[in-house]
Length: 537
Image 1 (cartoon, one colour):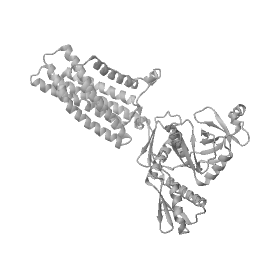
Image 2 (cartoon, helix red, strand yellow):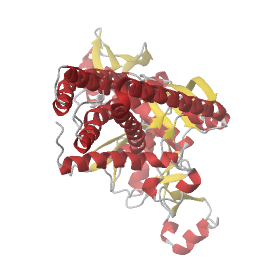
Image 3 (spheres, one colour):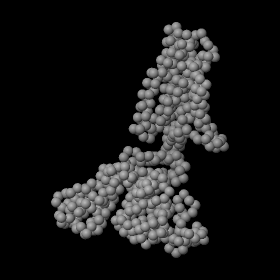
Image 4 (cartoon, helix red, strand yellow):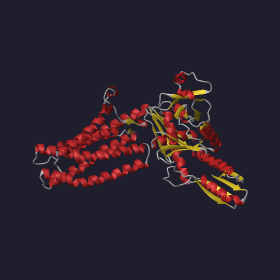
């Protein structure tokens, strides 16, 4: 175990140098770092508790979304019954979380049940999940009951949370430059952390802002260069408006009159083209707007209509045919991910869910700096205490090897956190401090075993070889069990708990590497260079 080939030495030293390369920018002043190449400018992200900023826990009011879904189903049932040879009913209303109704003629019930079952569509438009959106059951001789399935409720919950996160990200950090945390917390809550934020009232106003979605016909003037230049300068034809296209410098001239608003949109999902299987965006309108949209598209075949979200055109497809029935799809150069993002943006305007602030607090930068300073002091004290203990316990040579491994371990942890773009929080600093104490555990096991073998009369090479070989199993057992605990904390916990778990897990991996591999290389190098007759341990 003390023989290292050249390629092994190369990879060990390369790993250490890579850690030093990524960790070094954290020790360089910001002014100097800005002049370095891009790879050398990456540093650890400081969390809210270290940098200061705003912390909010938002609860999504899913009850309003479910109520709207029930109302959409009721309206759809009314429309379908009117179209199905005037199926007459005594009533159709929402009661106790379900749409209930009763037909006037008992002979009409089978036909009514057939219509209701046709209205229930798959939750997953790609067909991978066979669950339906609604359950239909007969009640009494002439009654029926329509309820939203658990699969559909879970899909609504998931999509509403995703839509809310997407809207918040667009509202609060439109440039994508803030190291903001937006994550699902439990089933119905969203964690929002904005490091460096000073005005919490401004963040609240952005949260409460409602997405404004509208549909406009694109005017012929959009094909005229002179008209477009005039529009950019603010000179527009009567009844026209000019909106910029998303992710583009240009825009389009559209009818100022809003033909269809976001309130008309019932749902929007990503999916696959029924024939060619490329990504598309499916959409459907509620009953009130379905007929209006059908009339609009039938009169304007070959023309374009613009979908405008917050005065920005997100798409402007061409109408290839009349879109009747209140549903259709948008096709273009989509990937599955881009189609999903567009569907989320469309739904953000169609299914607004009220966000309730259940917790809010502001962390001042001074408090964060105090935490950083305290963490530095604690780290230095811990490092110095551990280093002194190793020297006193195992002598100058072996203590120095252990301390060099410990210092390398800290550098590798900092380099790994920087490389992965992790956010360092106060619990993360606690994880690093804990790792300092745990990092020498492996060295203690190895050195104690070497000491035992030396007392048995083994020569230095044999004692060191046996010590490393017999210590490997207990070292791996101890660190793997701790790593399992860290992984469990990461997946079960959230926020600061995850920060602690990340630094602890990385510290465990790096400590095993530095103690079992790097320290062994240092020991073998010292042994070959000095060839001692006895071990100073």
